[in-house]
Length: 500
Ligand code: FRU
Image 1 (cartoon, rainbow, N blue to C red):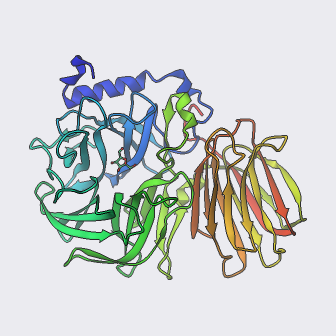
Image 2 (cartoon, rainbow, N blue to C red):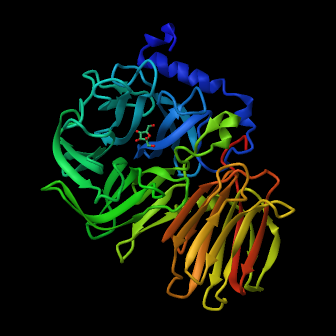
Image 3 (cartoon, helix red, strand yellow):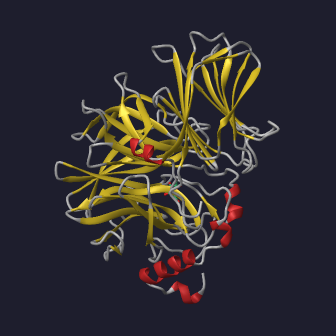
């Protein structure tokens, strides 16, 4: 860090960050992977959604941000607002590393992930101060704002000065909520190879007492739980705990449904599953809105992946906002918020048709890199076949992303091995047809992403793809037997950004 920058106040650091964004390179503005209707950084790097809140009638999304470069560096909090969850306005950077507990000289440091609450009209952000090499590396911090734009760090320093015991792995990502006049916080942690969610309580957001371990891994759920989020869902007092476990193989996020006991501070798990089955879904966070909806955003990338948009001077995006509901069988369903229908432009409907074995049916009337598609297949009328869609197809058919249902073993797959220049790989998930024998695939396609909501939100698969911009065709296909498409609806999606 340059000597001149080291001594800047928080305000000075924010000013530098905002100037960097003003100067953003042309390559960002013209980037062919820039998304049309997803939230992404104006320039530089984005990871986790932070501080989701509806405050004074506006939805706020903060996010992990490096405004200076398209890779992870000293973490700031970027900030965007919306009145409809669809159209977003970027605001000035909200937080910058500036204090001994969130600002270092080199290595990893910054204002790491956290959450937002409304404290009697004061927008309050609780985040992790992280400084590599400091002891402790991670502490929990508070910053407040009266106008929702400019934030002041708590003058007394960290509100939780370190983990409750020695020898843990990580201590970060506070998610705060209020219940019966008491503030509660879950913090991500790991000890003895087990990911854990620690629980704290406070009367004033400033002095916190450690309650205990609210939940922990059963030994198979990773050794550190990043970004825990604990909240009630549905009408029967059930709770859901979402975590992003480190070192759990292919499973990058988990949800657990169960009961939370405020008396003991323990969450009792009844059921758990992956929250999303794609490669690019991590560190999700939820907020409760004024209509009582639980709305989730996830980071639509994953650590360690190839990130082709870095070459354009930016990196990272949020998923579309998704509403969570609890089904009668205790599983969580996730569907895009209905507000997104406002982006639907020209519509094409295709009636029922049988796709013969080993054939492709081109759909020339549906073309593009910014589409919503709903395709309903009748599995009962289909052979023991594999059928589905190829999207983002090149004219010669060599490039495509395949979404296929395999009736024989009831698997849904998204194959991106021919999707372009990003990572390949096949996302695979067991899926039974719905009660009526149908498989319903709802796809949100943007210029470098695909989000799949199957069977009314029972399963989601989120992936980034990086095809050539000219690859815009859509094809139906069946293999090893005939498949029956009942109907297909497609809409061109409008852009929310002036430049894409
Ligand atoms: C999750 C995470 C968090 C951390 C943040 C740092 O992606 O590793 O645990 O707070 O990113 O940017």
